[in-house]
Image 1 (cartoon, rainbow, N blue to C red):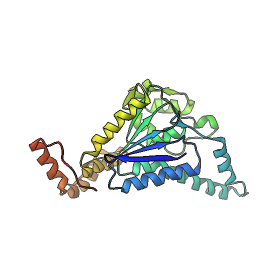
Image 2 (image 1 turned 120 degrees about the horizontal axis):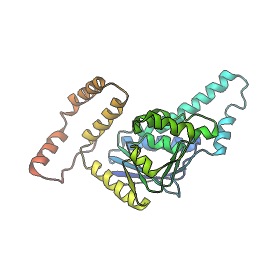
Image 3 (image 1 turned 45 degrees about the vertical axis):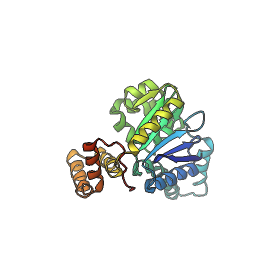
Image 4 (image 1 turned 90 degrees about the vertical axis):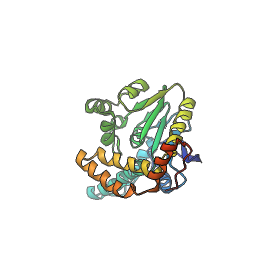
Length: 267
């Protein structure tokens, strides 16, 4: 897998080749999103696939690669430690989307299998074309998904029953069902139509105050895993600082003057 990256109108567009479960592409994901998180010229990110499919799932060579990490060890504890390090490394790489300060918009076409579901589950917003097929495939290769799907998917689709069905059976979910259960926000007629519209959404986000957008993402991610009261306390602590930003004055002035060409400073 590789990323091709472009940045226009403060929107970074990432085109990834087919993602498979190998260490190298995962590390590339982490590096890319950590760099964009700190890039002042980037305010939103669109993630899509450049090939015929979005992701193809696990590769047998990847399983062999993981097996080689423990082949030289006879002790169970040491084998377990080596595997734990690999699993945590994979988890950290995909969590980079969620930890990225900038909103990540995933645009899915065709197959989104295994690791692809892990990947988009860590994105902020998801879209797909009508030919999209989603599948939590891990049980079919003898393992439990361990890099994010089991933790994030139930909270995205708000149905523990459906999430468990998908993860236990590895059945395919088509675009219409993905829309109806809330996995994606919208289904498009084609990949090209989807990319054009998703970039427009990303450009709209990029025109907003980066203080407001980044604060909103931070608060929503925090609130998902905490109580309402804890979420309120978190945003109160955040806004006691951020309400002093120049962006608030600029946005208010723009609203009163109906000036839509307001430009916010880099953050």
